[in-house]
Every structure is written in C-alpha cells, then in structure tokens.
Image: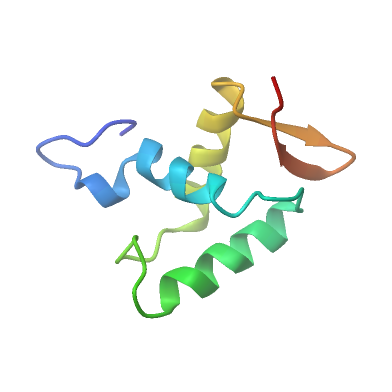
Length: 83
C-alpha cells in the first residue's frame, strides 16, 4: 500500500501519490483546494498519474506525509514542513 508491489502499481502507491501531492504545495492550501488541483491535473494531458485516485486514497497519502513530517496543518491550511 505504501510501496508498489506485485498487486499495486507504482502510480497507485501512497509514496508516489504523496510525492505528487507535494508538487502542488508551493504555498499552503486547504485540503479541498489541494484535492481539486490534483484532480484537475490528473484529468489533463501529460500527467504523471495516469489514473484518477479516490478521495480516501488521497487522504491516506496526506496521512502518510503527515506521519513522515513532510507536511503540517497551520490554521486549516496544509503546508510543506520546513526544517
């Protein structure tokens, strides 16, 4: 689930999805804005994630990033964690 495996393609692994989410966090955003931006990007041409992910998979990726201390929640906004 976290890493790709025999039954989970690389583009569906939580680390891959989390890395893709981090590319959208140049500035802090709400969870809903981040979700909409991710869906808009995945729906377009030339994306790195060919399949649309579900909202629960998106939240699991956010949980993983939070557990790894890669993101934090500040005043209702998701932001990249600074050293």
